[in-house]
Length: 165
Image 1 (cartoon, helix red, strand yellow):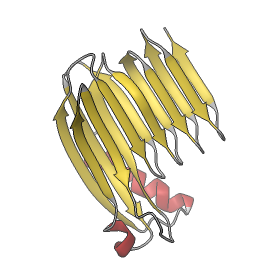
Image 2: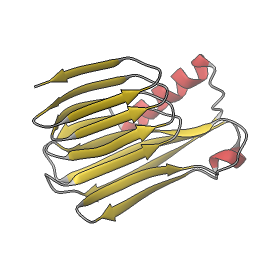
Image 3: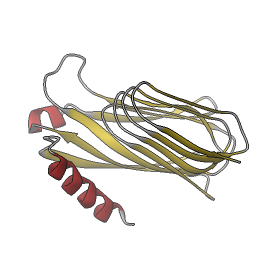
């Protein structure tokens, strides 16, 4: 499914569910990441959807959302190379009132170590990844189809579904 279609569908679902995210903005990034390296993701108020593929690149399609243009303009998505991997982090102001966050859709090398994939709210979905996977959310479900490594999932409020091979 194309990024534009996926973003449009997500926006319609969010609006229909009454989350109040009246303002959205797309963000895209593509960064090299070799097989076997480490990826960390820290998100705020939104789904993180990760799919493994046979390229040594991380493609990120994100939709930032907020209930005002002012809040939307304060959301940053930081993508940084680290020693041995890549870090993706959604940054929102420390003290704010109103709803804001991001939904992240990533394609990653199939053989990657997901050192930490976390969010304060929203589902975590991982499929087609072979390696270590550590997934956490404080409020949302975790769905994983992973193989070949250590798997850990934590949520305080949501289901955990895992297919491990």
